[in-house]
Image 1 (cartoon, helix red, strand yellow):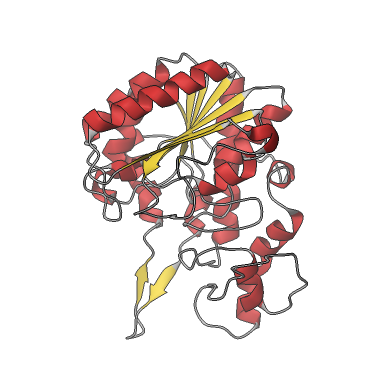
Image 2 (cartoon, rainbow, N blue to C red; image 1 turned 90 degrees about the vertical axis):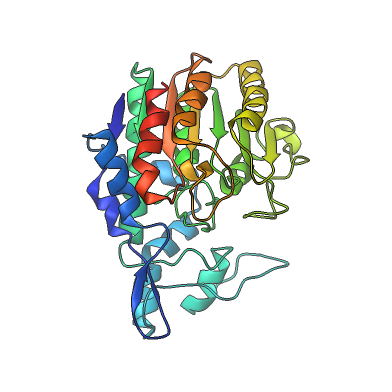
Length: 333
């Protein structure tokens, strides 16, 4: 399988400052990508598609903010990485806000996604990795793996969150639609891909299907409930399949079968899989019970759709097992 990665993705390296002044790596660390690469071997470099595919998904104002946020934070004399602490809970609207603290809240929805000096560079090349994987699939490859890091599926058109800054899967999907392709996105990360859902929620030309932890108990809480099915032209083009904590392979497979049935009925030209290995039993921030060998089983079922498939890496935080879990999933294709 064609695998794509760029070392500039490692530039995104936020750190948390402790009360004693020491810094510890953030949960979504460069070590995640290094563990994956160690397991899958070589990966090819991406082609630079420029910013146009990003603008097709994300607003100009948001991209300008993301590019300048860390520099603006430092220019304001603030220490460490740029992080939000105030959000507009109601009547969120575009405002001409000057202070970086205000703009951080305007373009994010949680405090879990600081912007470091290398965040724009890392996120930019993560998106280019997804687009290059798409090139391979549209060029005739049966499947390609985009080793995206930082991940993207929590990021909306004009907001970041959940360790995500640019929505890699959505950027690839929109680029495929622009080439006349009918696209389905299957999100199998432990956490619901709220950003991806939001981007396509009012559209019927992209199907979004997600199997994830019940948001009544798990992040992102406010999105991913079963009654969210899309709206307007997109009504019926969103399917959420929330599962309880403790879900193992036997309990997961019926949901996967239902997801695959919906995808088959949609008859897409291309499948984009937002793959998160945080469904693993040993993941430190998640609560499913999938084992390493289970990922090959899941991937084989997904591959049975016989669709050109782009696999886009999302979450997975048990670093010692992450490489093996990714390799198991890739082997299923």
